[in-house]
Length: 192
Image (cartoon, rainbow, N blue to C red):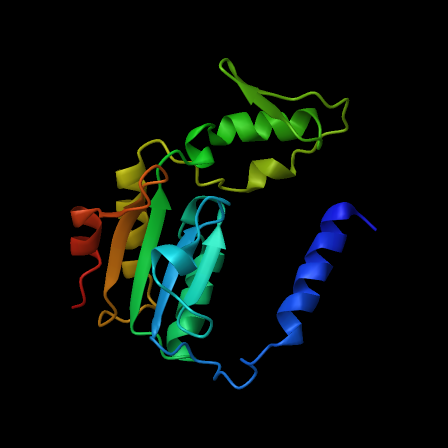
């Protein structure tokens, strides 16, 4: 067993020892959802004041409105009653440090973990690599505010998303902990 696995299982045993939330209903009590990045520096429960059972939190690389994220938002609304959605990207996001072409090149070289320095990303693996990365839109970010706007518009324009759901666009500042609204995104996501 790994050290990390031992730590996780030990923490879970402590958590489960006095667990008292087994009766929470499946629908989120505050009826909203957040789509945000998987970055370990972001704690949506803290920055949005959440407790277990309050909201749906959907996380992926960059907090991007991928097909799977939209699928989750639609399920959140259609089956579990959320009525408002937040799309939250953040400053200093790793998705700003590479392009689709860089990711494809790294994957073609090997499937080992890459490193980054001032000159960019580097692969140190000895292969084999894969061309399967050619078939994925990595949804990298070149302009944080514009990516929030694009994601809000992508969700808003999806045929399975009702016009009555407001979609708000924000950037979380990893240095201050503040949510900074992207007005153009929130305007694009206004309920109609």
